[in-house]
Image 1 (cartoon, one colour):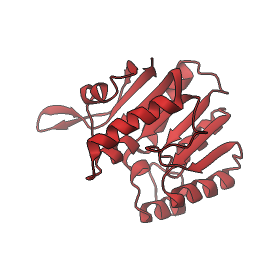
Image 2 (cartoon, rainbow, N blue to C red; image 1 turned 90 degrees about the vertical axis):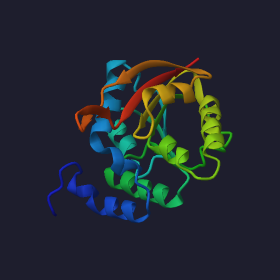
Image 3 (cartoon, rainbow, N blue to C red; image 1 turned 120 degrees about the horizontal axis):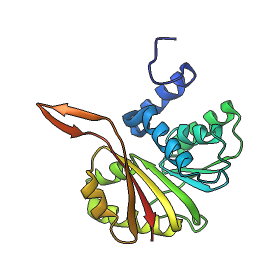
Image 4 (cartoon, rainbow, N blue to C red; image 1 turned 60 degrees about the horizontal axis):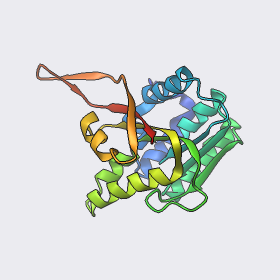
Length: 205
């Protein structure tokens, strides 16, 4: 295998396929964002049987890591059937039979997608926001979908590389309150410190 800094050699082939089907979600954030999410859940002593929804699961690797950390009620959705096929292959290879994967469009979620205690988004809200076709309407629909799938007092962890903290607070001001901002790497541009990644935890009211 060629040297590979942030991914196990085991994921090399999957990742190549993943890049070929054209969804960059996982690749934008990589491993440190997964570690950040898992650390927060552990620090909050979130029960291991809490129901977790990964919105735009891509190759499913975040849920694999959560399963390895002991979480048992895990669901990943993606609108791309290829991504779901890929995540199922990864799940089989890792022997993680308790993770559920479904093809779902989060902007039109099916009725059975409800009652989650934790929702996690790494890059899916970003991707929806970049849609040239009615991005504002799609962002509003995203917030409505989130309210319908997440239980009252449930947690929403979002990692974004397009939106600032203030912008995200504005997008989710109806029905959600911010609990905390998670530390992310700072990057320096021409002497000014810029954050290229924002990670926030919201709680549904």
